[in-house]
Length: 110
Image 1 (cartoon, helix red, strand yellow):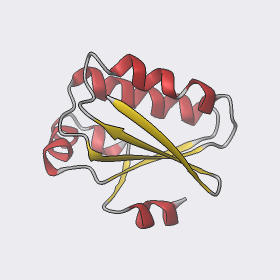
Image 2: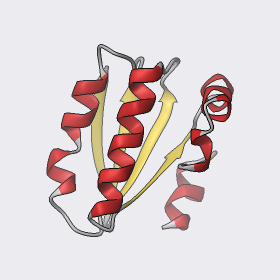
Image 3: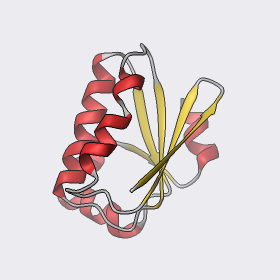
Image 4: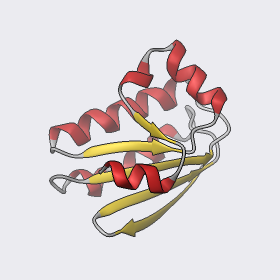
């Protein structure tokens, strides 16, 4: 998995490319360590190039979301493909994440 960073005003855009699975979940969580040191962090994760997520990826996403909440941060997702949305719905985690179809919609939500 490749992880790219951008900053749009005070919002961190994290662009993922590749599967979020058992092999990449640790790298994904490590990415957030510096962000979690900030209070009130705003994070937008772009899933446009994520074709697949497994239970380890879902667990990593939940952990990051919870840790952001502990430091009064917020996270949302955009460009999540239908297959991954279905996995989120089946596992009931869709209630944890705000999901948007575009960067613009997600950025306005902050």
